[in-house]
Image 1: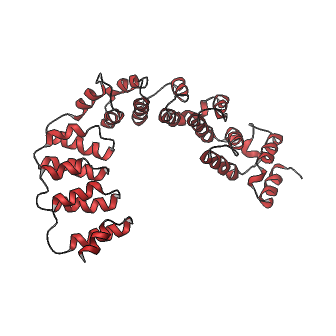
Image 2 (image 1 turned 45 degrees about the horizontal axis):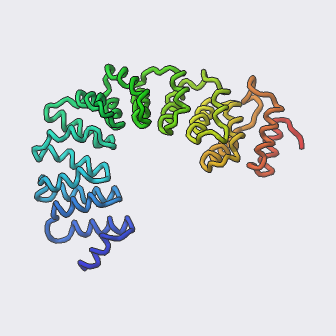
Image 3 (image 1 turned 30 degrees about the horizontal axis):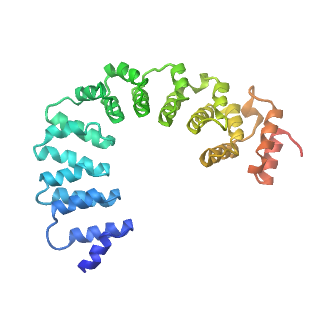
Length: 315
């Protein structure tokens, strides 16, 4: 039985491992905190890792340094968060500041709680991390924005011009989180940023202002030779604008080389109702008919005929 259970615990099947963990933890004898922590730190499945983590925290010796160090060094955020929270019970709350810039928002929130419980100021530590001459971590920038203080807005604005792309993206995301105003011209320039994460954040920040953007400027960035992340950011904004500009962009990309972009464009074309009234004041029937013919291969004969009838086109 022990050999079978050991085999199941190492099974590549996630559900088999979960079943084996429950068997192991409900069997005779007490769970060993250190062994459970090792399993939790090595487990790639979050649900299975949670079982091992809960067992490690409930077992005698859960406050041992070795157990906590294993948990705080795990790959899965929920396991690290459990380890960070356990630092207080182990009398190691001062170490919470070292986890403020964790890549997981869940772990950062636990670290801020731990720092506060120890009488510290997480916000002050974040500002120190962001102003580090060696260069801030993008997660420290995100953590600063999560603290939600108005005095940090100008600091985040300054980081939009940082040399590191991930830091620029984190600063843009932080400004959007705080609903801070960033000039359209600045965001439009960042659509051409070499870092994909920056272009994505710039496009997300521009979504509320999409109606006042120049659609021709965005359409110029759909060219097949342009960087993929720039093309996708421009396409996102044109789809959000809707109307004839979204339809033109979608039809232009129905044969795109990038599979995801191509499928998104085709789905948008298929979802269009193709009613002339839908594009009143934006396009005439002749242009709509031409766009429909370019995308005719996306429709069955019956569906294509319905759309032609709506446009008053006879074949």
